[in-house]
Length: 157
Image 1 (cartoon, rainbow, N blue to C red):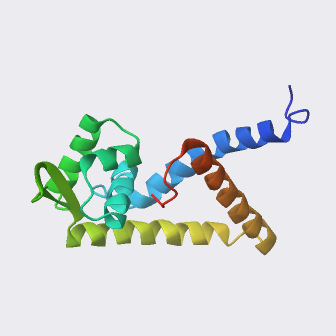
Image 2 (cartoon, helix red, strand yellow):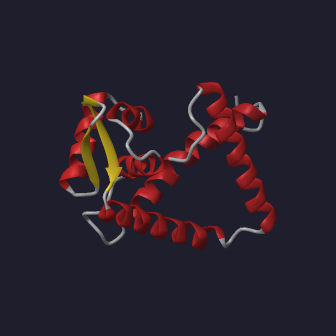
């Protein structure tokens, strides 16, 4: 079936599959721009989640990042070694670990967000108001559809 004969849903699905990896590569590059020690996209997602849910645990971070518990444990261990996350034992349950951002973790996260947002704003300036409004509406709809279908929490990050 050619793209011309494709159903609108199929055409949209192809556009998402063609676009999202490209956009994520570009975002990843901007987050690390000029900073080899800059945070990775999975670290960024973990930091955003921890900022929104201070005192969260490792299982919640693993769910948010979409990884196994051992992989999330290693990710968080790196963030702790980089002094971006503080790992504390929960006083109510010695087996539970609570995670919060350190001041430098918050600063690095905000710097990565700022660099990436400024790049996206420069990039999007070339589009007209109608295209921008359509893109924003389409992305909101896609997000809502995925959240609804997957039961995933709607929070950012």
